[in-house]
Image 1: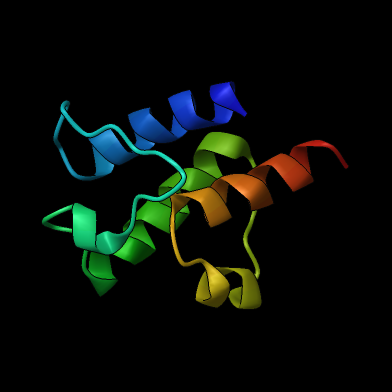
Image 2: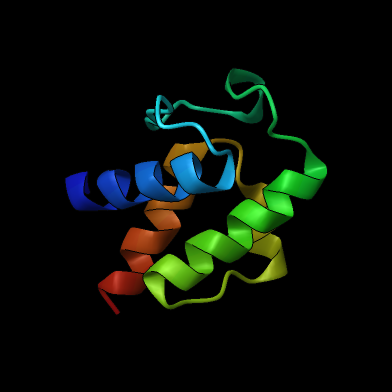
Length: 79
């Protein structure tokens, strides 16, 4: 899981153009200033590209924080 968070940090830093972003399982859109609905789409696409996977719509709509996103990535990696 540590590797997933490291890679997610890089994705978030790239998408939001902020090297100081450090995400954890509890990070939400409220914690990152520019994280709005448009940036959420960019973020989802960037995470999909980073991990070579696609989220389905129900996964995207049920993600409440970065921890939810990381869990989905981890589950996909173990399949």
